[in-house]
Image (cartoon, rainbow, N blue to C red; front, side, top):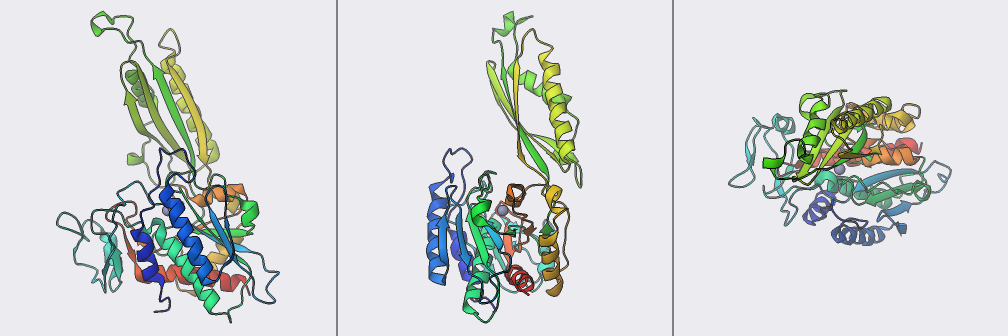
Length: 407
Ligand SMILES: [Zn+2]
């Protein structure tokens, strides 16, 4: 195998619980992430990295200096996140299935299995070595695969001193899964002309268009009186919030696809006294996002107008923007990745992502950052798996990008 440490490294990382915590006020959101980042720092030092920096927001930055004569090449970067999604991550036991036949059911445990009739994508993996869960946890290949691939590629570069390259910056960060990790990414310190997140899924993914995103919190204060005496007095805050939701266009995640945006109520809670609803809004176009935010604001106004006073308070804030707004005029990073894919015989899939990535934020902070596949699928749950062959390919892509860029 070209990368002798890739699989062991990945499995070692996957076993470490680094689940982020949405309800935390600390940065990073969980001490487990801090521990893991410390461990990575030690490992980088051992591999031969110099200049290892822990940033205020928990990000670990480090670099490999340019080889002799390549000092003038623009610095490029590779980024992955260390936290895992909101799913059980206690006692992760990755299981290796060598030479999968592309049709058998893979039994994870007595209750759960990976069945090609449920997950037809398994049929693409004939002859691959798959790494799965034991059915009780997620695998956390999102994004431990990305972390392992970047470190393995860098180790390869350091070991093969005959390979010429410019300066390379790498970054590992917390809290991608709760949407806050890259909020304060220090692009000045990172100082790459452009970078890549290694945080995609299926072989071939090269993502440079994402949703633009906003979130809304609606707080309703009711007038709680005994319902027997409610006529003309009682205001039910839960009903008021449901009324708002029902005034919105019927564009929800379950009935939109492709380039369509949506409204998604992610939380509704409360009682007869007070209630809160949370919504997220997604649209590929920035003015589309703006229009949707206005539609929500109008719906709130309309419901409020039914009462003698304001019952619902609306707060909206933007989360991230479609990185294509910037990348479409700045395609060097995308073209370089396309060239690397081409040389490796990988057909790029550049479909816009119905989501966001750390790269969405980092791009807007000043470093154009498209996203590249890791070789894992069915992310964020017990059915997650990765292909060793495609993880190797993702590692190849990193090295190929560096090679072409350094010519
Ligand atoms: Zn991820």
